[in-house]
Length: 335
Image 1 (cartoon, rainbow, N blue to C red):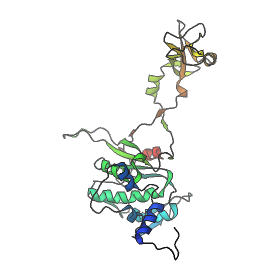
Image 2: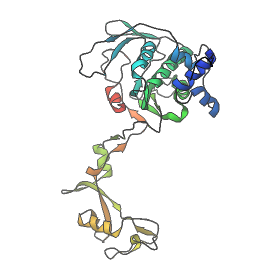
Image 3: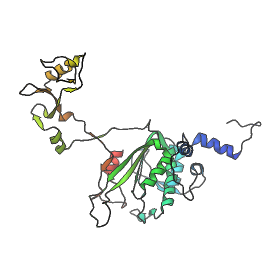
Image 4: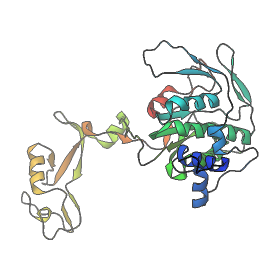
């Protein structure tokens, strides 16, 4: 923006310039209006501009830690002011965020030295606005490839989902993960047992997000179910047909192999050259009647893709610092 003797700028013009150039790539309120998505309205809901560029200040201090990693920080104070201050040095630099704001416990949480740490006595709209403000700041700290996991109780989680849509955009919603937190409950009340909570998973930009395609290893029980056969040389294995539905009129997979034609209405799943190679490696099992099947080895199984129901129970955990402290195995998966 050029300003000299020939230009005059009003406060409204300046605010519009800041909104356009220094907030999210696509302003969320205009996005919501354009796509006609719903959003929450409640008393004292702050404007995004006020949240990001307000002049409120608070006290906080960085705690010293005995660790060689220079980037590690422990900061004691109201995280709203901490996040705003971090924008000076860490804007668009954070690749992963996990937050777990307690809600609905009616408690004040203290650390092990009895210092006040968190007050969970807010009503719904106050809590949502407290969270919304911090989410806007977190969004600005997140890199273009970043993700955020918000762990929340189901009592208010679906309202939080709407807030997350407002801040990050509905398109950047990835998963609503159900976390099984305890064993099944048998309360004598007119309701189903509550043994899960939720984790809302969003990307800053789902087209650019970092994604590690992790898998769960196969259990012994599952291995025995899926790979029931055993060979001293190959280990545990199973077999699959080497033909597939559909007839090939002109092509290699419709021709004779080892004196056999594909069954009627089917074709060889692999080219005859590949079938020759598999047979030479001992990866074709021939039945007593001469029926060939491909050998699939258990040791080559890559595990099962992680689904959106995670079992990380808190039972038996040692809560050293807070009663809402989370399962380290859960955090390890997210990281």
